[in-house]
Image (tube, rainbow, N blue to C red; front, side, top):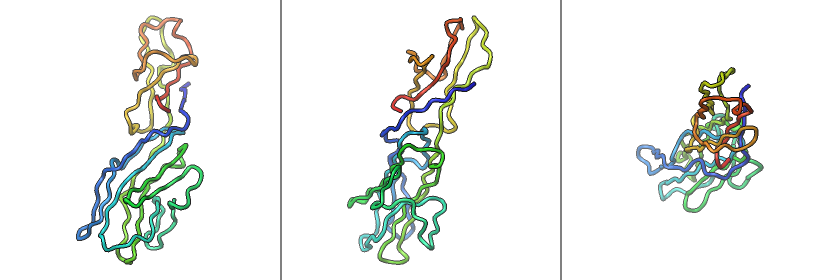
Amino acid sequence: TPTLLWGPDSSNDLFHASYVSGVDGTEWSVKYKQTKICALKGSTVFINGTYTKPAELEVKEQFWVTEDFNANENKPVYCRPTNDSGGVQCYVDKQQHFSLKLINVTKEDEHDYRFRIITNVAKQKWLGDPVKISVTELLVNTLLEVIEREAAVLTCTTTCSLTDSPTFIWYKNGRCLSSNTNPLHLRPVSSEDAGSYMCAVRGY
């Protein structure tokens, strides 16, 4: 039977922005680092970015939306900087940095997130490119039957490729093993290798 293990909340920054998008004839731009994030269930995810705008425009509203956003009606709003609540927090500063923080993420947090800016000129408003968040758990895969004195391979898998470069940790019967490689090779297998194996990612 596969074994699942995921870590507690983490403040590790999975995402920093640096992707540039603009509109012809304007000075609008936004910078992200990645537009796709794969996060472990229970971790904390940050989406950070900066934007520029034409100097003559005055920003009236800034907020985060998801894929169900109606640009004509400007709703529904996912998060406003002044209305942080529970596991969702968003911020913006005078230097035009913006961020969204998702705490203890679950499958329900899998969305395409966009940053919306509305100015004092009706036709001068901006909707950022989407940042897609996927949430995964850790699963240990191995053969159902292992023969003594032969090799066994245990693999810690996810449903998406984790955004950062993870270091895997292996546990046997709750005790941490010295090996942090993935997959984990046991060769040759003996009765001493029998037990329950779990994997985790360092820092989570």
